[in-house]
Image 1 (cartoon, rainbow, N blue to C red):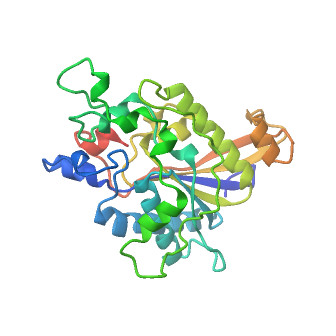
Image 2: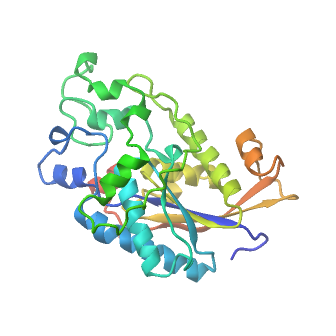
Length: 315
């Protein structure tokens, strides 16, 4: 499918349309209505239509590019990404993007979570937060006692377990239809640092996290095509660490947009050296050179108006 190297591919997709953004843009605020303001769901359109179409678009692109069908799906552990993963799996199956004998399940991977930065916390963790990325209250500085108590605990404690996510995804679904859509036996490769209020994840750490995830998953699936479902920041950070280019060349990720990166290991080329111990162990203890190719970048079902809230947030 690309010259000089035969290996696998990583597809990086952003989740579908968020319910809280739609409500906010219509004059409502979803944040005060929920006990989990950090974990908004998709809209019905996002969950039932947009994400299924994402899976179909991916399947068509893989066929066009001569790439293997999807053999594994990894998702951020936040609800909107797991809902997107579920819809994408359905679309992939409908469009022949999965081998006939292959059963795809969602692997909840902490390394794909949204950036645990201050802008994320202020979007949901203040009394007047309305889901806006980087929200600033009318009165500053922010008083510590007004910050949501769950913003002050380690970010891991905000996440649903795979079993809880399975239940969440199948509530209201036809009984037995998707009862094992989540791989409840999967253990996340990445261990999150205990980020929280005033202990934020920096941009440098975000980039390092995505660099590690790309190398680990390429090593785990050297000759396969896998789908990663994440958020605007992780998706563009992945582009930056793989290509060495500015995220602006990628552009803001629209809902359910995706990129495809081919990868293989070369002995001669002076590409990125895989020297992370965890990656080396996954590759059988060998140190090899990881080479990436841009196959498809920021494939979107719709273009973003630069004045739109979706463009401005990209999350």
